Image: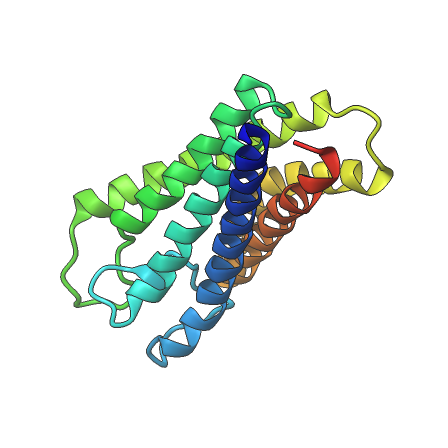
Length: 203
């Protein structure tokens, strides 16, 4: 009976994690459509679509929150698969996603009042997210055993993106939004593959 309950709970958590990831992706995809005409998804980031004083900013904020919840649930599900360092890093990534939703970026349009402290906290959390994701991916990649080639390629791609894309954003600011969305997409795919693989590993 306990095994049945455990199996049911595992299936529920896996489904909740997948639903959270899908809901988050949808929210971040549609958020730019509700932004003012001055917003460009190529130039402006997802954080700016959730900025202070912006109407409908709650859509992108909801996307951050659901992404964070999905990752934390995945960390719970992988307690026998990922080692403690990997779980801590990815759980930190998930929790920091919630933080960036709570403390919003400054608006891209001038003349709109905003809190510099809130913007600073957002930036610190966003930077921490990058380090947490890169660390988590590296540790999982090193600890993998008997995995297929495409997973190792995805690991490497995620790691390279977490380093190269921020550099590209600094050097080509006119494409900041495009680069950042590419990085988010890779993260979605990486976590999505981990969710899909859970039933196959029997955990």
